Image (cartoon, rainbow, N blue to C red):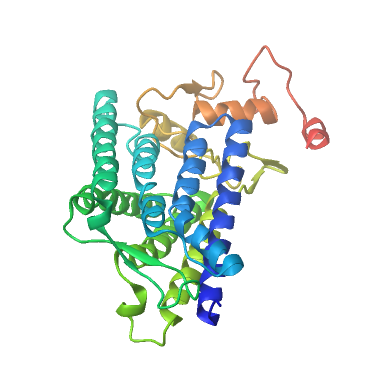
Length: 348
């Protein structure tokens, strides 16, 4: 019969896994509507992170409904198999969001390198899983969940260490830097992502690298409950970091087609943008709305009337909203009609 700690342990794992599936599928659906490959990749990353607990979930279901435990070999493979796909998809997200201004050949080189490391990890995991993974099995079958960790200094551990951990550090520092340099909604989103990385991966590493019950000097089961609860909280923070926001534009409101982290314009349209600022932003090739430096293959739009410079995404959003420049209110796309305030409000 499952113990009280075993039941709580099983329920926290199932809750986290279910939330991960919901948020991953939600991101995939939103990516289809917005045609965003980055958001699609984020959805896959969330699903892969959730699948890291697929072994624990199956073990939880067996404990709750059959009072037995999952086979240890299946448990270990299901737990660590998903790190390979997670590293590969994480590398793609890194290239698109953080290394977007890198040379194309360098981005391919980074992706190929981490893909090879991930493939080697998967091969070593299958060949050496009996010696690379150790398990803590309940004294009575079905009383509690099986716990497992990857043994330090084994070949799979080395492969994981040189791929996953550097990625976590680079992502965290990038979100911190981006949050400091940004403002408004974008800053809030990046800070939320940084907190997510600190909470989820910090506590998740404790769950994967050690036996939590042996690490903390706490009553049996208390530490693992704390870890799982914090990981669930990290999942909620991640959801709010991707959640759409209503963004004000003059006296009008609209919702962006993508989460504001991916395709954010601005919180409010400034009524007092000076000509000096327009000139300075144009000389520095900075979009006047989202204030991002336009580099690489990103297209730009230059208003023929006031010469305000916008990136392609912000220009497209202005065309969808009103088809007028935010500075001089001149028509942007001559092939499309200009929408007045009442036309816009009526379509929202």
